[in-house]
Length: 389
Image (cartoon, rainbow, N blue to C red; front, side, top):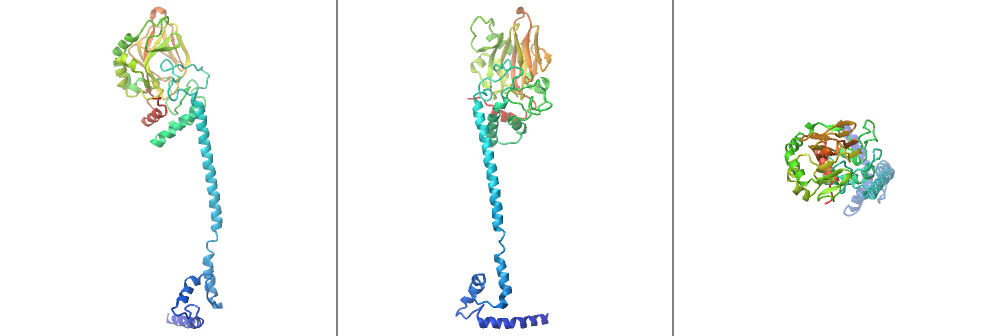
């Protein structure tokens, strides 16, 4: 170690003498300011000083420092290309969204079932004049539904919205995906992955079924207070809607999610029962409730409801012989004082084949949520399909 130190001092001695003589590092300036500049700014390329051949290694080392950022122009070019690609993708995305919204606005006047106005319902809620082969209005309203769903997600969250999002985007539905029954064709909204059956077990909505059946006497009295002869020869009494088909009449307490105050006041027992239900679609354009009357000889052919997200509950009030309900090819019949749960998104037919002496068939119809639609999905659909104020 001592030899190393000695050799080092011997090697460094002459250089320091030469530096002192030439004034390269410390200089001959009065206060050493020039030497300081040499060590600081003068040490970089472009500084002033007297350089000798022995300083070549130091100069090369210092010059290499300025050459380190050489890849910066290449990196800058790569970042510019990446930024340009991202900008192009963003502009393309905005164009797609704008195109969807423009198409939705163009179809909004034709899609009356989304907000306000009657929807394609059978018996209660509005006329459905589409034939069995008609495609429905779903594809024309997808853009509008998607836009309202995005507004809901911005206000709340996308949590639990997987099925609703697929439905709004026009995912696999009746006639568009494998494994879906061709006899189930909801006209406006198909919520995927819901159990599909023409008739739903009573236990699926036990509370509401039992409440309606226990209210049967009060609801029957209300019908007696608003009924008429249904001859068709006199003007429609107050509260009754124009016939959906010859011999088919209805009085609605809720129509497309909107309460009908005058009819509710005339039917206090039925209104009280509706207020006690847990799954009534009372804030949704798919939701209706009221009395449905079918005269002898009347028939409603080949109809599908607007969505599979609901279950239509039929409470039999007056059921004469010869009445029949066929849903998805499966025949059923009503019973007085009992509820029948129907998925009316399946193709269904209603008929009264009895004689004129039997009188009309009367049922009280209420639209309930499908039992497998989650709470978050119900809230989102209530927002998307909220009735106009």
